[in-house]
Image 1 (cartoon, rainbow, N blue to C red):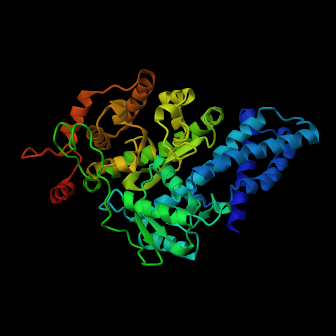
Image 2: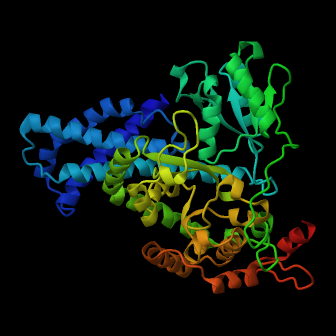
Image 3: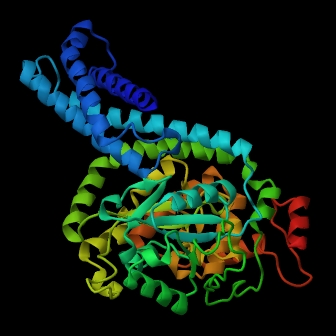
Length: 512
């Protein structure tokens, strides 16, 4: 029933988009004669949508949990529907009385309306959930990441129990299924990544995507595993820090607090920069009331509207880039990496692929120099590879302006303050040095931006981003020094506080 309701809403959006395209074509002037001429095309559009949209799968997801793949299905289903309707109408009456621009306008409006429905439902659900659940500000930035080996009722039990009792402490990266037909399917929202015999290959793929596995939960009896898989598990346990957890031997549903994460890499100037200070924590920033300023609500509404417009406007360019990537490095054309988002919540950051596979047919790692291509270097230099992140912005995982999301291994707990707001497509640190700046200096500029976010600063960052794309990155030592002076907690007796941090934040900082 829910799938039928979602299909009817999509068909309503397609019908409204057809009428809207006629009104746009006629400069918003309503004409009964023109509306009658549109009727066959309108009926064919609804009929084609009723047949094609379920095939594409636009009504099979939960709109309140819409992801990039859901918006991608819309971007495929709407053009197919319009193409089928146009062909059917042409066969019926040669598109008599119908302007040739109407199908083009229809595609644009249909994609926009269908995406807006999903994004609005996700935004509504997010606001309601946020009102009920307070963020775990004192939780560690990194949680335990688990890979499940085995597809059975025990694996289902583990996933459901982990989500129920340890949602913030355990992240399940995927499941290794029993046979190849399970690949790409989902078990309670967790992807089936491959077969047990592909364990080492799956670990390498996850590593490329920034996913660091801490524990492998084996939900089948050891005797059911092939000798190759048992040898691989033994080798992993002996040579890495990954824990092998045989579920048949012991039941462990809580995160292992003794797990040893590799220390975050430090910048060349040390953990506190060359200035020797530290930065406000996530708790300090939230308790200081910085992120409840009205500007953040205005900023989110602006991000939503602007990302929707840009998705429609850049859709033809993204199609061209996708075709070029497919011809250059092959499929899939998209690449994702797991990054910590606002409050450290995991998100998938999408880009167009710019490099070939990280390993050859024998599993040996290929150097980045040999993986790169001319098309890939152009996309990275012009930042066009980051266009898919418009969908991350649309669904509320990112913003146009904010701290750039890092890989989990690069997100130091000492710099948790930069996670107080949504990560950005570009930011203050990117336009004043970017990759040329050390981790601590970059974090200081990110925290400075959180305290000083405004329309004027966002506009300045946007303009400087254009200059950076054209001229390249350039370190601005003055801005780095300014950030440390205004938001850094200096060691020793000279303790200076950010202007927006109140007494609550001070107490938290001293206790910490």
